[in-house]
Image (tube, rainbow, N blue to C red; front, side, top):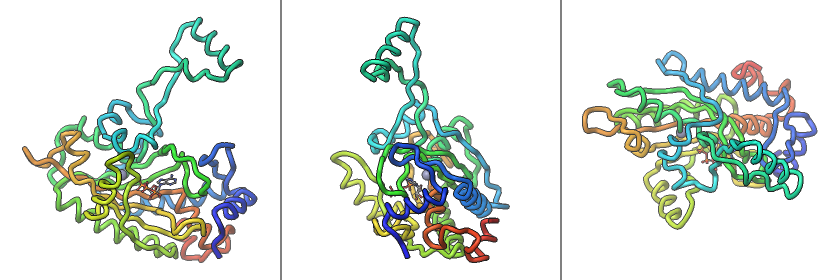
Length: 303
Ligand code: ATP
Ligand code: ZN
C-alpha cells in the first residue's frame, strides 16, 4: 500500500534509509539506501555493455561559461545555481566575519567563481565533444553520470535538490537520434519491468520559466520531445518521473557547432535515470526490507 509523501519519508527516516540534513530537498542516504542506488547504477551501466559506449564521469559542477552558452538560464533560471567563493584581501575578510557574526549577510562579500552546479548529467557532454572536434561518422554514444543540482525545495520526498542522474547521450544524424531514443525506451522499459515496477510511459514537458513557458511546454508535448517513465511512489502526486527519454533536435549541437557532415548540424538525444527516485520507487513497491524483495529483483541489482 502506498503512503503519503510525508508518511513514506517518516518511515524511510526511521529505518535509517534516509537522513535529514535540515534543509528541504537534501537528504543523505544510509547504507541500505546507498546499496540500492549502487545496484541501480550498475544495472543502468549494464544496459549499455558491449555497445562501444564511451563512459565519462563528471563531478557535481561544470564550467560556468559552458553553462551560460547552453541556454539553461534562458529556460530554467529558477532551478539554476552558481558557485560563489571568497576572493578578497584581509580587510574584506574582516568585513566578512563581521557580517557573519552580526547580521548574517556574509554572502554579499562573495564573488561568482567560474563554476556552476550541473543541472543535468548531459550538459557538460556537448562542450566536451565540441572541444574534441570532428564527430565519428556513425555518431557517438556516451554513458555519463553526475550529481545534479536543481534549486527546487519541496516537501515531496521524491523531489531532491541534489540527486544523481545516470544518462546515455547520443550525438549524430537526426534520424539516428530518434532511433536511439526508441531503442533506449524499449531497453529501459524492459529493465523497469524486470525490477517489477508498475511503470507508465507518458509524454511530458520541462518546467520552462517565464512568459514563453506555456508555448514551449505545449510544443514539447505536441512534438513528443520528452517521454517519462512514471512510477507511483506515494499518494501525494499522480506518479513520479523516474527516467526520461529526450529529443533535443539540434538545440545543443547548434550551440556547440557539432556537425555530422559539412554544413549539417547534428541532433542529440538523451535517456536519463534518476537514481534516488528509482531507489524510492523500489522501496515503495517492494517494501523497506530488501531481504524480502522478489529474488529476481535482488539478483538484477546484486543485492
Ligand atoms: P520532473 O518532471 O519530476 O521535474 P524532470 O522532467 O525535470 O523531472 P529530467 O530533467 O528529465 O527530469 O531528469 C531526468 C531524471 O532525473 C528524471 O526522470 C528523474 O528521475 C531525475 N530527477 C529530475 N529532477 C529530480 C529531482 N528534483 N529529484 C530527484 N530526481 C530528479
Ligand atoms: Zn540529458
